[in-house]
View 1 (tube, rainbow, N blue to C red):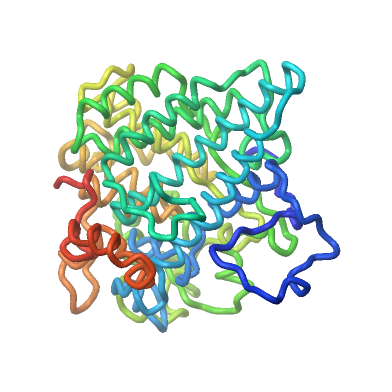
View 2 (view 1 turned 30 degrees about the vertical axis):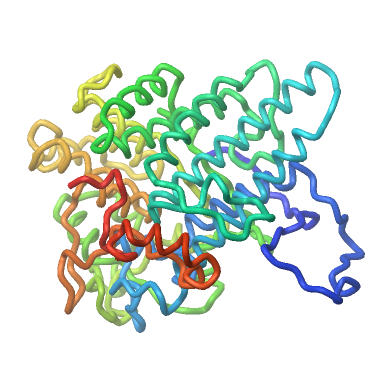
Length: 480
């Protein structure tokens, strides 16, 4: 892991969508500067993005539940796919638009307004703009993957309070162009944001790997909907260099200080609550595969030598089932949004689809599992892999089942990606909450309830494309 340090950016101005009048004197911060810097805004956006993606608080992020890595105890509504009671779609929507994209956009504007400087400073600014663009593309793609059509071309304009919703596939096509351009503009002779870059401390080479890896992930996402586009950008990404070692993972290191701890720790420890146990969906599978990573993901049930998962979608007694591992109970546990493991699995799929990348599907599949073991500090990979249910040549099913199952396991603690890959590859077979059917498992978020009031006409036009805003309608890339 890199030793990036998260700084407390108390000088950052958080941008809101509305403001109060006649209260200006109370809004003045006499201790901190009133003008935000592009570096501070970038740092704030990246931290907010990672916080949102790794969180487990049911008011902010339910994807570890939707991927069925964890089950709930007293209140299982979210495991039963109730989206409205906690305003979950609104909270996710607001976090990505307001706390990530808005700050990135303001950082970009401030950098573009800078004139002059030395040749080295101009190169650094160009790199910084490319890094902003790469994170922006990642965030926009995430919004599309969650909701489908979203405000895009007219979004982030404070003077346009009624932005139209753009077609999801059209957005993706534009994002491919944007990230290709951004990667090409990176100049390794210069620097980036330095210590304000929580991923790579300004290392431009690593940003190139990250950008290409985001591009590859996006390419594989759309493969069933647009094979030609997927093939083109998979090739570009592969030729440009990818994250193939865990030392290049997109990770931020959390600290122990207030405001810098891992949100998972906040939900599991600081809250004083006991809301989660391991889900039987993943625990049963890992038990069946004799998967050593289970000791890194979960704890044995108290007073036993066994890992026992709670019934997904039901209320579970906290003391009766395995808890999440002690690693996840640490305030400093790193936050991760992209890894070597997932890129190897993406390359295995690319090979199976006949794309122009090197290596074998079996080789990348094996490397993906190995990278996951290494990422979590698990031992026993060799014995695990030679099992007939794991080895690529003998594991059950076609390539979608083999890759989809192992990728889903490797995505533990990254619920959004685990849920998304299940939607795309249709593996593994998830459990059905009591009283529901398999068809009730969501394949998208509904739009925030407030959008019906604030931007109703545009929202309604978008909702019509998704069976009236159904949570089981499919995003354009989800073809099967």
